[in-house]
Image (tube, rainbow, N blue to C red; front, top):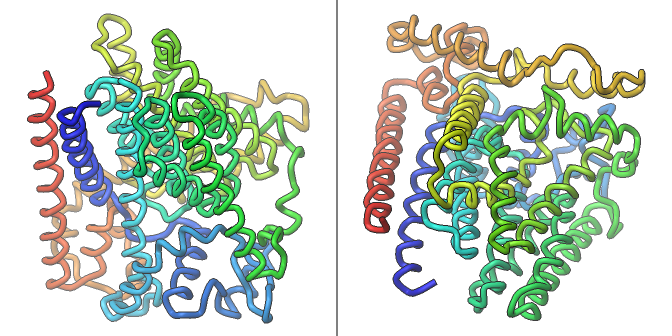
Length: 515
């Protein structure tokens, strides 16, 4: 890539980041969806308060007593969550700011209200950064600006990464580290690897297991990929040294909590593999209710895109993408809780969405016509509608997510796995219907929202207006705040919208100069 090309790519990447961050920040909810997220936030609060990773005694004891414990008694008689350390560490600033602003929370709400609100803006940043990494991966492999931009945009707006940007789950961070490591290695393979690429590869490889230990399975295909290309020694050394540092740090993290290098906090749960492999494989790949491709139909286009990459000689890259995806599917399908618990879609496969978008880069590298263009338009439209439906209305009340895994496991046990009943397509049917109902309710009651008086937390929980409001932070602030905070929220929302508009104009101008 020439200096001029690098300058254009940098401008385009910056505009892409700002555009997606603006959209994802507008879409942020400002509240957690699951116990896992609450535990992450509580751990971040503990870190910000100088108490390390230990949870409060009463809270930790309750978590440890659950049927599926989320915490374990550790050294010094203190309780620690079983989760990886990176997400709470990254959330520390949000926790520190949120605790300072606790007086702004609605009367009667928990002390976590403002912390959770601010923490909700972490993954919009992470997801926008991951889209930039997708863009740079495509650019490093010679894909046109058109294809690279399409891949980055569709990753951020058309895949399951979009609704997960509303959460504080660890999967978006793991996805960012995976795609950043891949992009850095692609630069090495093209002969352009310098100190910056080495630093990116080493840092991403180190932070990947610290974001989510099981995500380290992706390091195997990445290590094989590092062995190809021109500067394989430096590429491999960067990856191996980073990965080794990350795993050692994780071991020390375990030892500091539980006195053992190998005890992660999952206990016996960590060994529950091989119980429902066939059901997990079916569920993650082809079931109507949990399939990776049902929740991100646009990634079906990645399959012919990767085939096009093979024809262009990108064998190593296609094998790396395939290896990452296949290993993640095999790993999680083999675990007893392959569905990811009560969550939106196949949560554990969120980190694989970014690398799959390389196939989208190849697919959109050149204009396509006829049937291919129509298929692309349909897949993009359906994907975006699915992501918006998951984001506009909370999936928890109407989405029968947790029963999906149970139903599929039962079908396997009864020998009817390939005929478990009529396809339900829950993300399409149940969630879209709920989103449409909430949208219609909000429009019908717009005047009521405008004149809604601020209320305490108990009144907010019982309010039908609040229950049916769009699941975005602005509406949360509007229903929970007084006039001054409402005005501030309106100004912030307007600034975010302006950022989106300016970024769109900037991208259009840059693409015009490239053409």
